[in-house]
Length: 281
Image 1 (cartoon, one colour):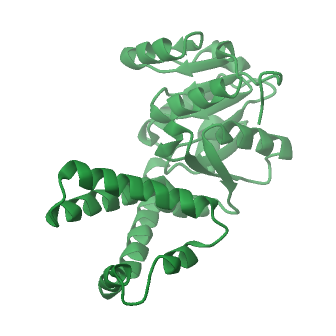
Image 2 (tube, rainbow, N blue to C red):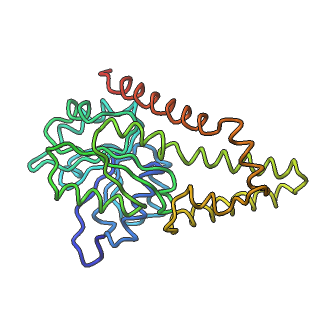
Image 3 (cartoon, rainbow, N blue to C red):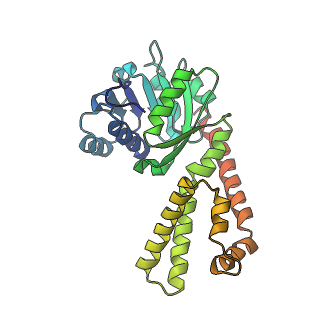
């Protein structure tokens, strides 16, 4: 990971929303200088928030020559807006061209390349826990990306959590379904566990605290244990006990098939969005 003693590249974010904020916070905590970070954000309210929380960064209402000198551009706008924005950005690409890291759902590298022109592209899919530095990000790059570019992308995204590389761009659709949308699945389970606790007589406050803290503890144990999740589950499931009774209900309801169908549906939707957003307006 880069430190204060390491010369950070000049960084430009196109879009100043939640994921951009997470990245900026991670970069600054990792030693980046605010003066080396530019953000293009048309919303005055968003710019005011960024100025208050990250003093010293450069804030722009639209992309101009200021970002032409950045080593890395991070695309962090809504996917449906990217085509005209990318075409505008193409006029600012100099020599050498920037490394462009896209964190947009549903935008393929081929479409970005068609709009941006001559540059180096990496596609990534972070998730919302990046706001706490606990994100899970997958990255994909084609054969034109150098090992140096891959290392730089890994360093920048590691600032907000863990990073993995996938072998094909199609894998990003599955990543979107598993980790991109995944936090919502766990939020739903916490919500349902809380409601079930209330139905059994617990107060809402107690049920919510128990549900959230149990999810947190289970995730931490799964992350740090040398045992896999299946083994951990078996370790807390005594034959004829309460856990076994609950898991039997999940099995009868075919929870495994429900989860598989949900992830498959999210993967398919990611593919559909890639087709829709990749069209020229």
